Length: 196
Image (cartoon, rainbow, N blue to C red; front, side):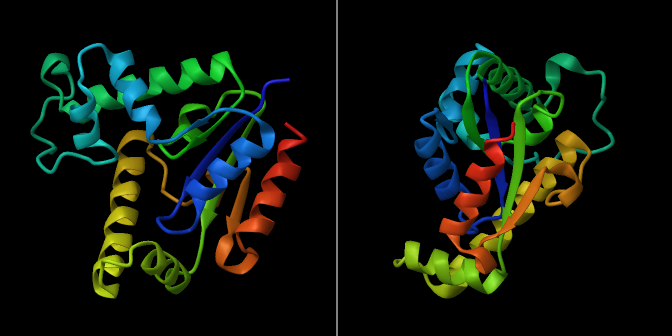
């Protein structure tokens, strides 16, 4: 039976690592940054560079004065969102997989056999973890990066899904890696995946 696992995450909480380890344990494909290239190819009119530029960001100049009906002059990020939705749905239709980020939990909300996971952790734990992974950055730079990425993900999620980022009611399971650790969080995901 097909299994789809989406992993949304706070920056530095270990969601990417959990995605890789879950996919490896289940022997199914993982889609994360590679999804960007698939999205660009699926859209037909976006280059991978354009997709990377707009990844998980909302245009600064998007405002109420922009016509909601101006289909052909929409911001690039709207085109990217539509291409991303198409690519994620096609992957989920085709095969079992783990998808990290990209609001896949929302995009696949009506899919059966889909486990939607959110991974979070205490800020200081994330800071310590990311400082270890980014030794050339100062603690202040890492702290600013964590806040910046979390804010961008929140804005992106709200803009395209209408949901509040990190709201537990959007997921089947939320895991606090600073409390559980990565290994125990993986065990919980794999156990839950047995039942989808």
